[in-house]
Length: 188
Image (cartoon, rainbow, N blue to C red; front, side):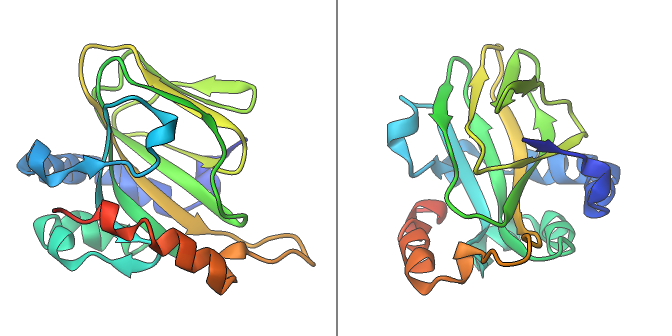
């Protein structure tokens, strides 16, 4: 389910600085991106340039995007951050994310026309310079029916759970499993 972006003050900071983020993105080449590790969800065309992966800073990548790194480091309880690229014609199958207690934020940067994200029963379109926040554990799917590659700044962050529930990111076995995907987020 989608959340109200205004409930998260860092989204305004990202929106106010989106052109800075896009300028740093434009300095990267396609070679800087690697395939998203969950290949069973798509054929081809979903790539990532990671800045943070499961709480671990990817120093070499962050050095290429110092201003973006400063911005994402202002996000409370940051778990993951990076640029998510979806090439024209790509469809990410319906799926759910792993961790409870984590929300995902997207900041639209490039190629948003003709693209969409369905979360539960609601579909939204990305807009350049605008954020939206959603619960990654709700079934969602994405597509790019436009002519350009769509790129967003993707952020995952922990949020407080209801009393009596625990965040499975605090489970060491879950974190080890997630960190197993870490090599996919690093430039080869």
